Length: 189
Image 1: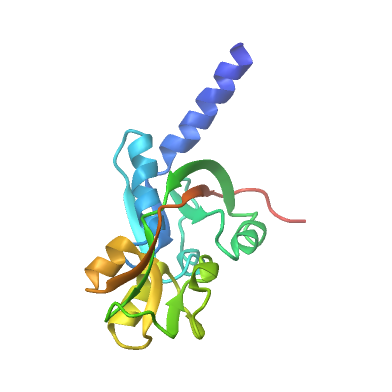
Image 2 (image 1 turned 90 degrees about the vertical axis):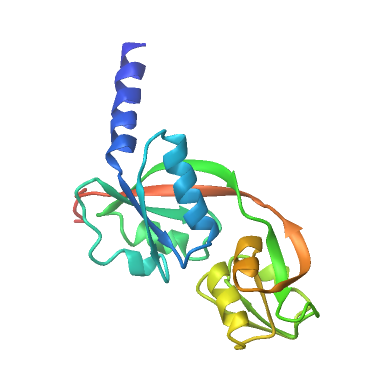
């Protein structure tokens, strides 16, 4: 029992030490929402910094234990993020939290032929004539609004923020998010 308490205290201390989470932007991504939710569940404030890709968050990430990366279990390159950074990132937590409603949206409300989509929810774009990759669901909405594509797979808040019309609402998706602490860990031999 004493060993369990000591281990739990150590885990709690590690979780409390993370004060800033770096994750996928722009504003309105499911990952941004999940980062704020993680701090809410920790019952404390914390900063969330957004990047065009999760990989772009890594250079310059302080390894003092106060910064972490929040990822998603379905992120197409999560295995590369984890195994390519074993010496500087360690997974410290995971949790389930629903995404925003995932939607197929367009500027007109008509079913689009050319769709922008992040690789993770690509299957939701089934039936589209062509799918162009986007760095995030929120970026897909921005690309659609800018006229780069006819439609997008995005979140309901991002669709609304960009004045898009929902063609199909897939609803929220229960999702696993992972928290990786930046630290000075073991050195590969």
